[in-house]
Length: 453
Ligand SMILES: [Zn+2]
Image 1: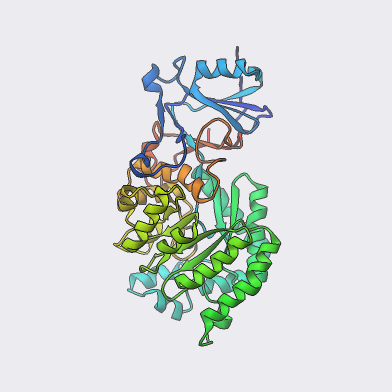
Image 2: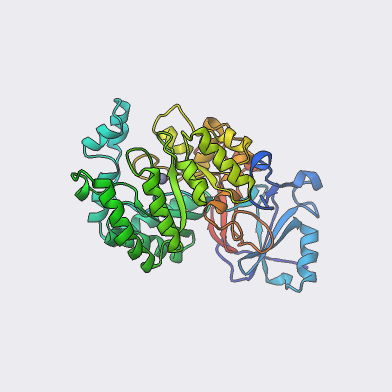
């Protein structure tokens, strides 16, 4: 039976899709990865069955946006036929000797903001620290001022621009935090923009409320500034954000000198009461009780973790062992961009059985990169993760960090048909060619949304 070719790389109006001609299909199927399994990505290689184009070379079949199966082409065609799907209604996407992976999932970005902060790079080169930069009018608060002043349309255009950039790096789902408004009206505006951009597509956007990103400028001169803002968050901002209904998760910058563990616990517990999944920026600059808190309250993910305490690591290891894992979402592009020589202990987390995810932390101050593959390179070079461990970290484990492990992050029957065809024959080359454009085709929910052929 012959199959119709997809015309010119644009979405064909066919309900089925068959991806063929791959050198390998890496499914990352079988659930989130941790411990010695972190790097088990389930690689199906054409070379093992007679080469690309062989009768049973690895292929992927999808129908109406969901994956029907992954397997040898001949087996898959028989399965599709046996289950009653009309083969002539499948378009065929030729991977042309490239590797096929699940669509990448970026589990940590600050997508919606205005302005840029390139001057801070030079200040840092001259040895300026966080507080010096803040005193010079930089840092988070300068982005807050620019964001509050920006028109909604400007913020939306900016977010759309960077999502398009992320798509070119193979990303099909992105978490997007608010946190540059720090007042109810602007936070709601940012969450609304994130939500609308997700509805617009093709990238799926998961909005997270990060009202507790910093204490806003209008409160900072008060002696009880942080506590006053926490009360405002609990009494006004959180109820308002929850009623607005766009955010699905709540995040707190839990760090000594920002929001302490007790304040973070109060905010996240209250947020959970409104049905928002708790997550936190934890132990980025100093051990601050963030990892411990994440395990205690059952956060879906604890992020950064450059300096967790031994107690915090042990708490996360126990949680993982007990089947209620907190994902360690590590952000190596940030430590790289900040020129730090101390990195998150990824190998320790892996050794202790904690699932590890990787994100870009895309933001205008400390990690202005939209490239998740570049973050994979940083994970390999600075965190000593293997390329396969890094791939699991940006697919199925990143999906787990977003509470979406049943929907996305791997190529297996029933999940969304989100996948990438790479121009290289193995996904092990993704972190190996830093900053190269390796994406050939991106499929979101069964539709070709980017094609460089
Ligand atoms: Zn962040």
